[in-house]
Image 1 (cartoon, helix red, strand yellow):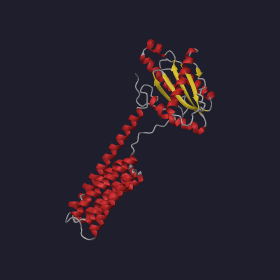
Image 2 (spheres, one colour):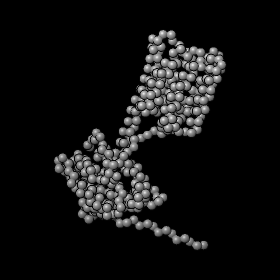
Image 3 (cartoon, rainbow, N blue to C red):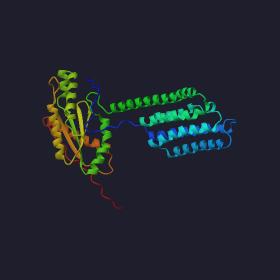
Image 4 (spheres, helix red, strand yellow):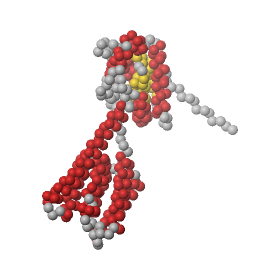
Length: 369
């Protein structure tokens, strides 16, 4: 089989990369960290000699209570936006600074490693620009928090460099890892929608696009068309020239169709030498014109060695009905187009056949007792 380094997508069809439910994930993560930090920090309220007496103790207690309340609120809400996440990360940085100002010995009871929590959250949930702002704020907070504990500027600089450098390096490493994971997930998700031989989309993608097409057709008052293309005498070509040539012919057909379908149409290989095109048309006549274009494109397509085939095309159209299941309706439409394709085969191949309009079952008459 031929290999494809970079399968080409169907023109005009945008595939969203997979996304984590980051709104809820960020909310639950932040809520857990805030509540955990509030509970752990509250222990200092009962430990003698940690907090400054007077206002320092009250400010510290209010800060811990605020963390618990904020965490509970976010957990109940269950969602937080990217902008709110950014401000909550900065709040975590400032909370550490408030803690430092309320205790006697910051180096002993409030190590800068406490900033690891907001740093990791920032690395995972913030965009590069926001992460850069957070890294600058981290360094500034470390300077402000450690300043009273050092008489020497050199000692302060070394400690700030080690603490802020460690925190920012960890954040940067996690951010790079996260983006690498996202790229791999996006590539994997894309490959699950592609046929590896032709680079066309597969049955899964066809099913995923059905609800979108059905909604658009109902909104615009137009019809959905399905065209089933089956390559003529493809088994004979494989038997006579080998499967390598057959694979090359499939690739040539895919290239020809890819450049012929309209931007909004969905082109997929559903198996073997059968392909399906799904699109929107105003009437069956427009669908027939498109079917003829596809048939001509297949007939004109050739491999580098001059091999080619023709295709029999079956076409069916339907007007989506309110309340119907788009997936079930899709396969009913494809079945009708498939039957029309076999009619084209019987009539001599290399032609387009249009399925008869679908008949709707009559509604049962109401019965009277």
